Amino acid sequence: MRILQVSSELFPLLKTGGLADVAGALPAALGAQACDVRPLLPGFPAVVAGLHAAQTIGNFTTPWGERIEVVLGHLPGLGAAGQALKAYVLLAPGLYDRPGNPYHDAQHHPYTDNHRRFAALGWGAAHLAYGLDSAWSPQLVHCHDWHAGLAPACMALWDSPHRVPSLFTIHNLAYQGCFDAGCFPELGLPASAFSVGGLEFYGQVSFMKAGLVYANHISTVSPTYAREIQTAEQGFGLDGLLRSRAAQLSGILNGVDGSVWDPKHDALLPHPFDMRKLTGKALNKAHLQAETDLEALPDAPLFTLVGRLTEQKGLPLVLGGIEEIVGGGGQLLVLGSGDAALEHALAGQAHAYPGRVAVRLDYDEALAHRIFGGSDVTLVPSRFEPCGLTQLYGMKYGSLPLVRRVGGLADTVTDTDLETLDDSSATGFVFDAFDSTPYRSALRRAFALYRRRADWNRVRHNGMRIASSWQDSARQYRDLYASLISTP
Ligand code: ADP
Ligand code: GLC
Image (cartoon, rainbow, N blue to C red; front, side, top):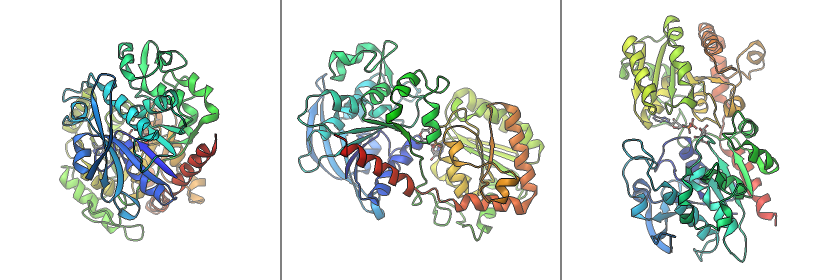
């Protein structure tokens, strides 16, 4: 099957979060399922720099008269078995050639022309779907998140002698790509699309809604999140639409890319280790404590959090639980960047508890690996979480996840109790309400298990044993693609 994968990020070229990990892992995982996947990406500087042997295959002109060149090149080491992956990139320096974050400027202001920058991604996908590359045309277009939301709309609404099905995957409903209605004429869509039944959303244009309305099928990154987004509480105003499309909405869990995340072969770890020989894990912890100015306490449970510092990730709970961690003799290390108020509050706590709390306000891929490698508990107490990857990386690296029972966290972590210890399904600590009392109680349970070392080791072993590879999920995507392609 020939699949065009449309996303704005792809690891290792460009990453701001889990979307990049997924877009980077899927082509090879699907390659192993006999799918020929080609990514389409905007020509951000890091993407253009990573693309080899690029050749122009066509171009198109935007409604505001900008010419966009579509090139096809190779991304080395990203295909099946580490081969080069063929990828399409949109060359439009006026839209994409800007340093830093792909979505906003250095002052964290979203670029004012984001509707143009990501409309172009949608058009690029639609042009490729309808024959821009005479040597390869996709049988299905798989669009990821709002950045690619215009693709299903163009594919459904443009005139074409044949139709190519589209799949739209929601990675996070909280980010919707909403723009002023005045930008609609620049989107190249018929006027009728600016309506309640189209991409109009409370008077604005919503790229997320465009994906949800016009895609042949909608998926999201866990079965629980697929249900949650159909409720008012988690639907961000789109729950009614999602309920109306429930028959075409499903959840497929993310996996772990073993070529990037494997403690046995991880070149970014000072001391690689595996399930059978965990001495490296203890050495990584000592290394991590030293490099982050935490006291060298081998027996203090080290709680860590790697993530975007946003409301979503449950930072208020983490801040409120610091006394519990420090008072219990543990340590806390946070790596993240984001909300200025959260950054400030975390830095204040590191100052208040030197040697016990450390905070790195940064984005650092290599440090993230060293953290999972040395950590005892991976905190993911999210308010909502479509899937979550850090709990999976924690498990794989022998760090027990402590998570809220929500979204993909509920689908991937099993709470530790006598029953789950006994049947070897326990993998971490799960609490329910988004409230400090159950969160702190989960922290105390982590301390209690840490003191029972044999049981701790069993739970750690359970987590490391669960492969969470992409194989099962890639099969589910393959089956979904096949059913959409065969449906007239
Ligand atoms: P989300 O996509 O909501 O941010 P995920 O858990 O799905 O959450 O994925 C986050 C990804 O980004 C993981 O690969 C995580 O290790 C990485 N990450 C997040 N923040 C940082 C950071 N400050 N430094 C390095 N990696 C980070
Ligand atoms: C989003 C979600 C996260 C998910 C990731 C990859 O950013 O917030 O839960 O794991 O996308 O699908």
